[in-house]
Amino acid sequence: MNFELPFFTNLLILLVTAKVFGELFERFKQPAMIGEIIAGILLGPSLLGLIHPTADIKVISELGIFLLVILTGLEINIDDILKSLKGRRLIISIMAFFIPLFCGFAVGHFFGLKMMTTMFIGLCIAITALPVSIRILMDLGKLNSEVGQKIISVAIFDDIAALSVLGVLLNLKDTNITIASVAKVASMSLLKLVVFIALLAFSYYITKRLSRKGDFVENALSKLLAVIKGKEPLFAIFFAFILLFSSVTEALGFHFIIGAFCSSMLLSDSILGKENLKTIE
Image (tube, rainbow, N blue to C red):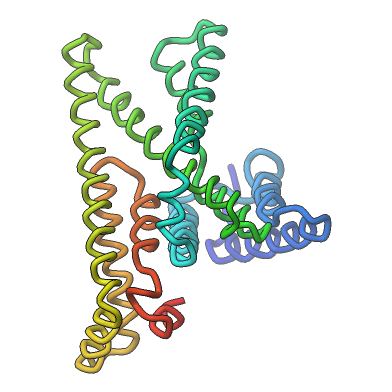
């Protein structure tokens, strides 16, 4: 029988241990996140088994990732990301997805695994884990560098591609794999991808148009905030927009993290105003 510590005790142990290991790795000029991951492995079922994954810890971890990608998105210029997906850089993004994908297929085929299992292995290798890439770049102070922008753009491209393929595989799991069923499921996933890109493009177009009007949005927000009597109204409006965008993204079959990151990138200081952005951060 496993002894389970109270939730807040688990949380305290996780935070303190992660901080200690993170500080230790920073002393050796390594990303703090590497130490934090090792702390999780040490405390988890892999080694000591002191802390077990629970629904409460899962919620806290997803909330932490959610806040991390929002803060990162506010610091990144979406125009720089779009520039990183043009020309030869787009080819790099495509190859960064397909080369690991085919390598995963080859491993699964070599060990004689089933086709579905082989495809899942390929996707696991191809997906980039966007929040992890973001955190490591932040630890290294390279988030807004040219290399950092390229890494983020490739990670976004690869994750969207991987989640699109994953959606097809999950829908095919409980159906007879025929040409007709594969075509039907693939067309639905492609339609969802097109809708997501169209939504993002439309939102980007609107924000660009609004940014050209100078302080239009900032003045409109100031007038709205003057009417609202509740505390932290700007914070509530900001998160309402992020959550709405993330919910729509998740409804289309993509992870809510992608929606949160993309929506926070749209809300630059030219839209909200520097003072409003500081208030949110």
